Image (cartoon, rainbow, N blue to C red; front, top):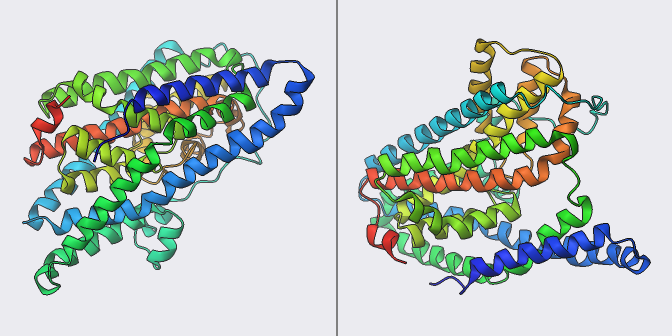
Amino acid sequence: MESPKNLTRNILLGMFLGALVGAFFFYAPFTFVTTSKVFLEEMVFNLGSEIFMNLLKMLVVPLVFFSLVSGIASLTSLKSFGSIAGKTVGLYLFTTAIAVSLSLFVGSIFKPGSNYLNSMPQNVDQLPQGQSLYETIAGIFPANILEAMASNDMLAIVFFSILFGLALNKTNHLTGNLSASFEKLNTVFLQLVLMVMTIAPVGVFCLIGKFVITDGFNIFKDVVLYVVLLTGVLLIHAFVTYSLLLKFLAQLNPLWFFNKMKEAAIFAFSTSSSAATIPVTLKTVNQDIGVDKDVASFVVPVGATINMDGTAIMQGMATIFIAQIAGMDLTLIQYVQVVLLAVITSIGTAAVPSAGTITLVIILQQFNLPLEAIGIILAVDRILDMIRTSVNITGDATVACVVARSENSFNKEVFNKA
């Protein structure tokens, strides 16, 4: 199975044209533009982006289920699964801790909130409410797996898929090699991913156009330093932290890795959803980078659920930013608490657009910081969320490479193939 030709070029072209058309209809003062804007926004950008996102989300649950089940069922030794799971979770928590620590360090030096002059937003009625740690842990064990699948509850889906895969592994000799059927179904859904990817440039055009035609480019105003610092930390974490992990733990060329990841990163940027990007990430990690299916099928879905390095960076920078606005100096102990909270809450953060603001509420409440200030963060969060999601899925792929190399489940020939 091969990806559509010139896909990266066409996606970038779709992004550019979407931003260009959206900006024209946002800024142009002509009457005919104003009257056409409503139709374009509703029936082209909104409808097109919703159809594209629905197609991606449609594939997430069956692809994760069949990929994870077939991967576990094909393992010759279940001890290797325990090793894969332990390394995966440990690496994800480790990179998240590095991410938020880096964010706090940069924020404490450059102080993005010290010169903020605007008044504090007062309306907090629309702030999202997060779920407790108890609810997060309880939600891993679904009472109704069909309901969990219908609501895209990834933790529950991953848990059930693991159980089903383990059971299939133990009974495969009694079921006439039933695992082969799951392998074939997994191949079918991977082909569906490639079919959806053929319309990706159009979907990206609508997604970017929807954002620009609504908000334009003038949303940053006097929070420029916050935006610049957060973007800088995201890029440093993506290109420095992950490069070091790839170089020293996986013995892979980081530049070649990032070249292989560009399509998935662009997908993540345009959708702002790690979950919606799972099909593309899985295909990239397995078929383009060379991570064996049994590793990729576990690491990627789990990463879309608990690996939120980009979100952790935002939470660290936002906490510093809001504390400085409120005139509060955080102590070293409080910095450590922020790191721990960001790591813990990242496990329960939904892999959907702007979900990080939910867990940000929990952190701000812990330090009695003004929740009203989230209104400032939300004003610029949409474009930053797109960058964060690209960082998140790049982290998923990085950890998949490290785990696969340590388990001798990596195809170097596929990785080196142009």
